[in-house]
Amino acid sequence: MSNTIGGLALTYADWARRINDDGSLANIINLLSQTNEILQDMLVVEGNLPTGHKTTVRTGLPQAAWRLLNYGVPKAKSTTAQVIDTCGMLEVYSEIDKDIADLNADAPNFRLSEDMAFLEAMNQQMAQTLFYGNTAVNPERFLGLAPRYSTVNTANAQTANNVIDMGGTGSTNTSIWVVVWGPNTVHGIFPKGGNAGLIANDLGEYTLHDPNGGQYQGYRSHYKWNCGLSVRDWRYVVRLANVDITSFAGSNPPDLIKGLIRALHRLPTQPLGVGTEQVIGALGAAQDHTMELGRTAIYCNRTVRTWLDIQASSKTNVLLNIGQFDGKPVTTFRGVPIRTCDSLLNTEARVA
Image 1: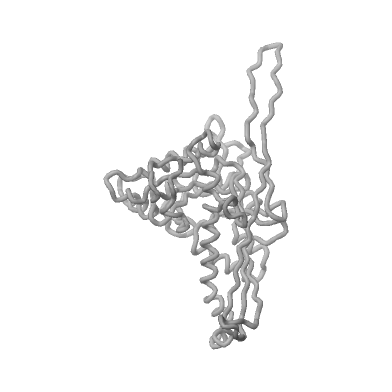
Image 2: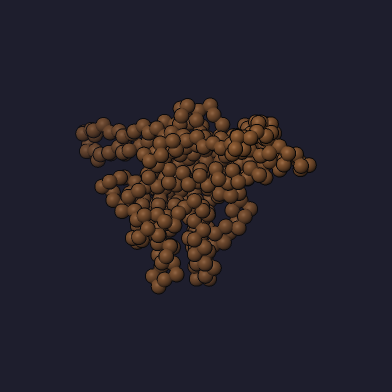
């Protein structure tokens, strides 16, 4: 299955292959995607601003009218609003003693193996920001999903229509997310004229300093990742909030299957599987001019994923299945892959 949706949005790995012909950047991207599954799915678009992306979102539909013979109908138009999503700059320097690296026959690969801890830290921080980033609290970051879907009260926010309350009331909650990645739905962004994904710069030999001010020769690497998130159509994200993880082993656990069914029915179009969606005509047949919406995925943490897999092992369950996705075994729900994200907390406060 191709990762390219309509030629407009690509994954980080796609961008890396297009930008860097020697493949070095692509190797780092592949390392990151192995430790966090959301990076395999998230499509990325180059922003139209040096600091992010300005997009026009539809806020209302035009009102049609029934017409009588010899009478006209009033003019109608949709309503839109422009939204600016900013990018955050995530950076770190890695340093290693030159003599330690030179003891190995392959110093570059040894340095990369030592840098994996830095890459994993950046991975976790990026994934956590995708879900929980709040520019009102941390303006240097970007706005994630949770602040956009932070209430079940439709009087407070339109997005509350896509927040489903799973009943948890304490502070031992987690969330399950359904996201349709696509150029017209939800996608990552990077600044105009910048590079997609993580930028790795080998700064070579450098004079380093120990905690006491002593100097020694070492190698320094610089890693930088500029990224943001654009939700062009809020209807293509659904949050199952207030999933109490302490109730799974009890006598009245949350019904995850019914919750996922409700979540998929909140999407404007039902997923046809893990690939490209189609707009279905009134008579049920696909139109000649199908609209590519994106790829759908379900995100949960390891605790929820474990219980879903336990339920999937039941022979009476026909909605959860163990299948193949990108050549790997994965649990699917009605054909939509369920992806593990350790950055989803088990300590979320109640969403009200």
